[in-house]
Image 1: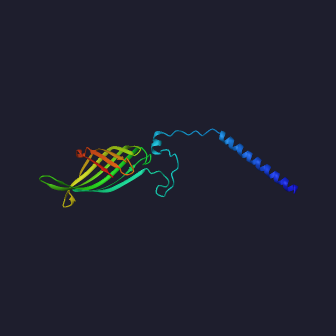
Image 2: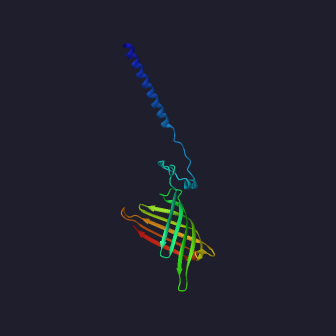
Image 3: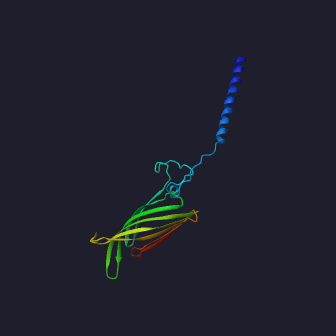
Length: 205
């Protein structure tokens, strides 16, 4: 019985000594000076922005932040039919303010009517525009400026006889406002030096 008590006392003493040594090592680690990290350059912060926390992993992005926004659609009007596709790249993630780069390609068929002539044309358009995105609360504004190209031809018997190439500058501004969870407003404006064209639109939903 005495040997059992003695063995128990020895085990308790060893455990207390081990615990004290571990606590001392932890205190020494806390006294170590923090590691000094170099501040990233401007271009490094633009292309590889700092992530405050690791995003959850998913199979679509592989755990990386979303920096690409893809877009496509079809527009139908009374005298035209168009299809477009493009992408917008945001180095700082698509949900943050900062530099953006947008590329859009479109193909359309239009009918023009004059007092003496009615004809159809096919128009291929392409734009490459860098810009900047600003947002505050439920308000978002994107302003872009770049170069645009247009290839058009008059259709004769549903075929293009001769193509014409045009180059010009283009600016675009997109506005999004969500004053409440029940409704939203969207507006856009675009202008180009090609044939001095411009367009604007606004919608609520």
